[in-house]
Length: 390
Image 1: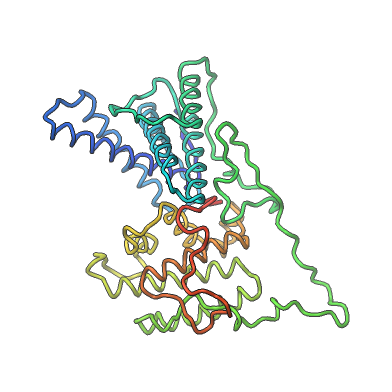
Image 2: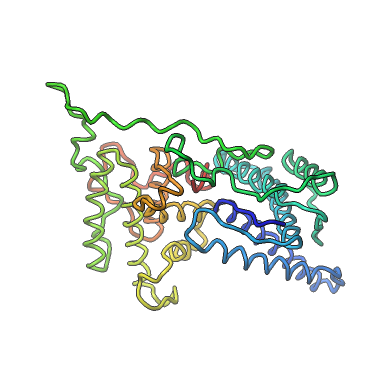
């Protein structure tokens, strides 16, 4: 089949689906071995194919681009579609669990729709059946619709399809309708991949002379003293990093006071990177890193430091946060423009402060506004990510 282009968030969903399937295949092999029962003839072969697919997707998603191109042959596509089907069935089980938070339920449903949509897009004849038992739970509407569409596409009369391109991957001709830094899954539907870029950003304020006696906006006049810092930078052990964070946090406070969410997001990424480096310096043996810090993958070090406390959405949020530096690169903005909205900024800020707490740096109490609660979790904590990379 032709190469397919997908947004990086979709490629990460593929990777998670393949990892889930690989875990199920490994558990099935171990159970058969412990029981002394013979394994299906194709179990070892399928396990090897899924493992190779995992390695390929890990390499493909390790870059910094917003779009990932996957070169899959027919057998690779069959393996990936089978893994996506398994992931959709696994999410069915999660969605019927009692006590599942509503924000996590909504996030899982949107992720399930994305995986099902792209499974249909890349499906081709013949479909691969995994040597695994089906779950005993009743399939959801998404699972039933996925099975029907796969059968129809694989065994129906289909015309040759052109190269599959990720929705919204082509650069728009103007900034009107540019997707925000937090809108990814919102516009993806199971049967419709047409982009819906939403409303255009608000026009810039007038640059003309102010009317006599006109009041200056409070946010523009603010010096940042009323904005709480992300955390107490004095807790940074390394003196050089501590000085850098102090400068960045003061700039962050001024940016927030001026409602400059774009610059505030970039500075948040810088502050969190310094905290991660300081944490790794103190536990260098645990992370097995070498060489200069500028060669380290700070995003992966952060996820490694969080360990089991990593929520399923955290990898996506970390990618978005550390990709914020592209907001200052005109060449990148020319090809794939993006903006930061107030809502997406709040989601990223909650993520940064949660990471700082988990790393042991906490949040400063000296400049919190009256009535603020230290460590109060965002309602989006957990699996609340609506969207992903633009």
